[in-house]
Image 1: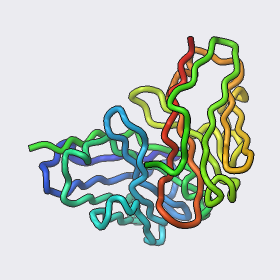
Image 2 (image 1 turned 45 degrees about the vertical axis):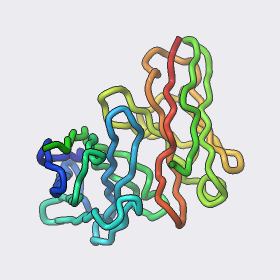
Image 3 (image 1 turned 180 degrees about the vertical axis):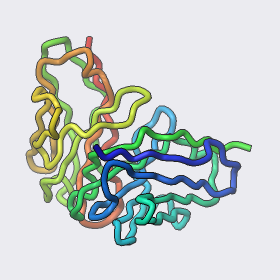
Length: 121
Length: 111
């Protein structure tokens, strides 16, 4: 059973960089698309971006150039950095596995449990 | 503003059937059979319940079914049960443009 697990600080100060890591157990990170998704309190799901195991990435244009997603295949992990955070970035952050083809990049079959990140001074 | 529009809420009595719509465009739902649906209970991570418009992952109840007509996809829950009370989100592949991956979400209430 593939199990993604998010880790990282639960509190980040405004203007600083949010950093999260998703460690995947029970299966290889290879040959799949992996996404970061967030959910502000009481609101809907927002896709942040994806990375393919080869390292190619794409992200939500609404987040402009603040997003960096990277992969470490040797550790079966991928990571998210979101710079210049504000209170609007407060959310539960999920990592999830997409499909193995571009057309199934949004078919998220395995999700982490989510981690709440609060942006506050 | 999401590219996929869902009703904010749908309700039904136990045993009834309900349908949730997901309206997109000819650039996503209308052009591809890669629509998925997710169920999210409060405080929990979303769970994939339908993929590729109408396929159920192993272990998902056959009370959940999906379909598509034109630019609108639908999720039907038959024999509604108390445990079905949750938020539901659709998602569709789109080839280009903004990546509004998820629908606006629908809260299902079992009366």
